[in-house]
Length: 310
Length: 302
Image (cartoon, rainbow over all chains, first blue to last red; front, side, top):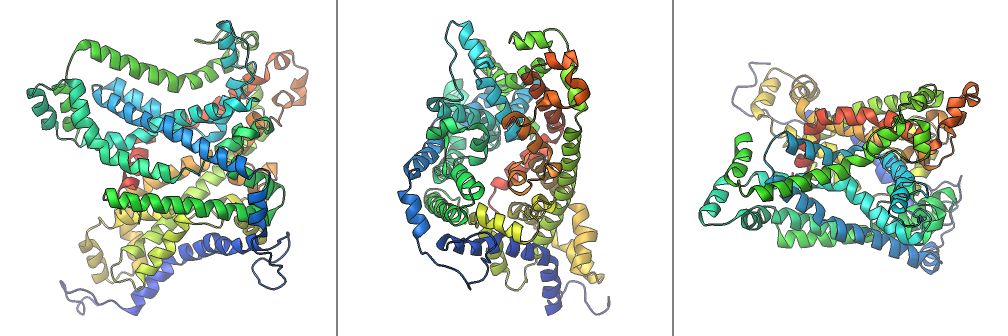
């Protein structure tokens, strides 16, 4: 064998190679077919009256109902509330949360490297690794009528507030918790971009008489501008994808007015309620919207920066 | 790298007042991030009376491990702990294996139909059937209410395949060529040569999987009505969110125990939060560099 293939010459590529390679990939391809593509096909039940036990994989014995479930959902009593909550919760997170990691990374960049800076970084990343369930459990106990927040309010002479049952407070609780959980980890990309700045730039700026604040404004901030831009575009692209897995943990029927989003409604009414066709229709509706938003974001990103997802 | 990063700060040493302000802000941010955890920990070890009176803010008052004593006797929690270990180890192993199997063929330049395969892999990243079709599928396959329901559907991650592929393309071609000259097949090349030198990227994927699976609960909520199969996070969900498990009734022998009755529910909840989260808090600083590596790799365009 050794004698046949001469060194330096590219080995010819046989059908056998392709067969081998496809066999190697086979488990992945099959898995995706079953667990990603069959559910995509399963979307057809959004246009049927599906009931459990009915074969949704076959076209036989199906009662097609067209867009009935979509129309019912659009005209249903909760449609306006669900869209409003889904949008608002993402919107608050964007408006109040987007700039936090930027400021935080600029701040970290000003600290001297050492144990303290490392500690601040490590501490700020920590909430990202704590499970949603644990964070929800902590938040729920803090906002309870006899929880720490109300104890503090009383210490300052206030009266306890029913934070967990009053709908008006839910958006604030959700937004603050989400920011707390993510700001540190989100600063990583900014820090990485800033660490690649040529130190001579700072030196030159200093010679020109730029003080520390001006150096930050004219060197550090511009260095992360592309990153900010890209992340902002994609944050706008996800304006209708509130974190329903987390909301599911911290909401309760009394705050549905401001807390119920499409994802939680889909779980409650579609899955638990057994309204499979309606739930699939709602899921399809929201994923079409999200895909459209992502597509627009990607197009914008490609146009204004060099970065695009596809 | 280290010296580059240190330099700007050296140059930029400015007014000490500014320094003090910056460090104070950083300290406050630290406090905001860590205090909730600290509060939960000191509450869980303080004396029950002080906890009931909500007197504990800055340091533990009194000392009582009664809540932990109750928790370690909780059979259901240990059951959930061991389930989580099964889910984490099986899931992580499968995730790494599938990422390698999916990534390698994509790095071979002459693969026929590569473009199609890439499209086939990428479409599920942006579009899926959604919760209910997946639920119905898992039911149809007979996986519902079995351990496989939370292991198998999640074992392929396109994201991981992309990360591994990116790493594989940095492996010099000469290494592969010489293996082929020695008569190796693709499978042999992959397992004998490529995987052993890919430990850095496999570590990143493994650690992301471990933490992801350790923290996941929603799949179990949807697919596992049988409480015996619940992972730790589902057990926690029942205790601290649904409040459907009364920790005071953990063991009947202890029900009449005076100490157990004195313990407030909140203290038991905090103790169980600490007990289940400590493994993550203690191991995460060591794994931090892998997480950061993964986050930075993922942000690069392939």
